[in-house]
Length: 378
Ligand code: PLP
Image (cartoon, rainbow, N blue to C red; front, side, top):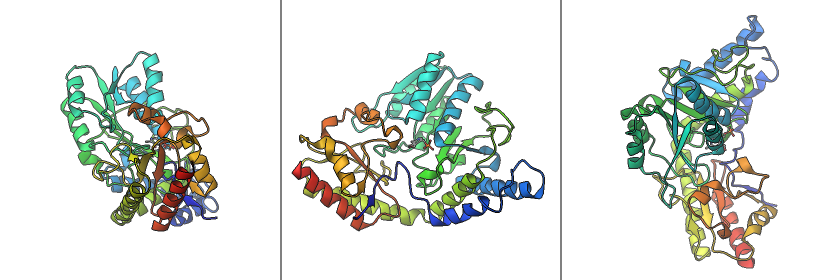
C-alpha cells in the first residue's frame, strides 16, 4: 500500500546526508568532549565547528549558541531562567503557544509571576497595539510569542514584535521551533533575547535542540552539573545530535528557496483540490495567505458528518499519516488548545496536514482522493 507521510510538523524524516555526518560519532569518534586527550579533542572540535556553523547561519556569535536536549528544554530555560535571573515579574504570551510555553507559564504563575494572554482574532492573530498598550505599564516583562504556530502555521511578524519589545524595554523570547530551517533568521537584526530550535523539525535527529541567548542577556542555567556548554547546560553533550543539527540546518539553508517554492506549491495544490472536491471545507488560521502562514502547514475543517471523528483513523488505515492537532499530545486524545482558542468547531474534524521537501504532487493527490472518498462515505 502507498504510505504518505503528511505529519512533518510533528517530525521530519532524517536527511541521509545528515545521518552520514552523524555516523562517525557513533563509531570511531566516541570520546567524551570534556576529555583532554585526542579522543576527546576530536569530538570537542566537532562540537565547536557545529556551533560556528549554526551561529554563521543565524548570523550571531558562536558564544550565543547553546545546545540543549530539545526545543522544549530550550523554551523552559528561556522562561524559567528569565524569571529567576532577570527579575521578570510578568510574562505576556498567547493561548496558542506550544505547551512547552503554556505549561511553563502555569508553573511560574503558581510561583507568583503574572501571566497575561494576548487576545487573538478568529484567525489566530495577535493585536500588536494591545501588546504596546500592555508594555506601557512598566513592569519587568518577558514577551514570549512563537514565530510559526505548529498547528495552524500562523506567522508572527517577528521584527515588529521585537521592535515593540525593544521600544518598551521588554525581554523578548520567540519559540522559533517550527520556523527555524524554513525561513532565514538573522537574529542579530531581529533583536531577540532568546530564540530556540529543534533539529527534528528540519530533517535532523530527535533529541537535539538549541537556544540562542543574546550575549547581553545574562541568565543562570536550568540544568546544573559538570559545567558543559560554558556552564549553561550541564550534561555530557549529545555529540551526534549536535553534529546532525548543524548539518541539517546547513542543508536547509542551502536549498531553502527551492524547497519553499516546492512545498508552497504542494500546499496550494491541496487547497485547490480540497476546495473543488468537498463543499464547505474551510482552512483554519491564515492558511490561504502565504505571507502570514508557514508553508509547511495546512489545517482544515470539514463540514460536519456523523463520522468525522473516525476520519484520522481511516486515513491512517488508508496509508496517510497526518494529525488532528499537535503530535506532542498524541496518545492523549485531548482536543487542540489552539483550535479551541480560535473557536473552531471540534465536530468539523480539524485535520493538520504538514509537508516536507520529500512530499510529491502524487502524495497530495492521493491524500485528497482518499479524504474525499472517506468523507463522502462517512
Ligand atoms: N515549540 C513548538 C512550536 C513545537 O512545534 C515543538 C514540537 O512540536 C516544540 C516547541 C518542542 O520541541 P521538541 O520536540 O524538540 O521538544
